[in-house]
Image 1 (cartoon, rainbow, N blue to C red):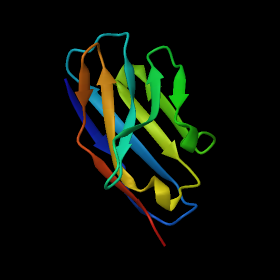
Image 2: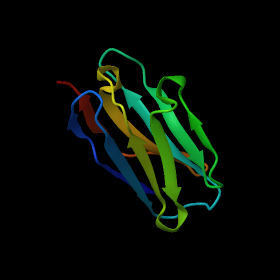
Image 3: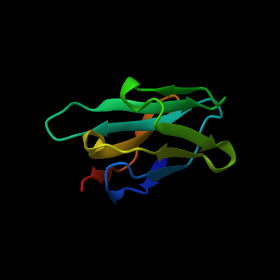
Image 4: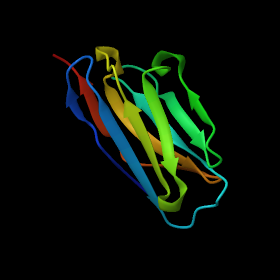
Length: 113
């Protein structure tokens, strides 16, 4: 299984970005996909996850600002990030639990004026 993430970049506070992560390989239909992030000096933290049935879960810090969604036909998960704050700056990693854990390469998100 391979995960390919895209969509990071530099954005001003209050701006938006959309991350995408496409999984390829042999994937069980029942799975969880989502995103962790890691800022310098911090531990990796869960940002959002979504089951194959469409049930989302969010970190408290991003509720109301981030929306996770997925396209099961494409084995792709998306993270729409709105109202970005400087504290959202981190490397974002997508993951797939199927049932083992798989990780994509990180994509940098920088929120700065």
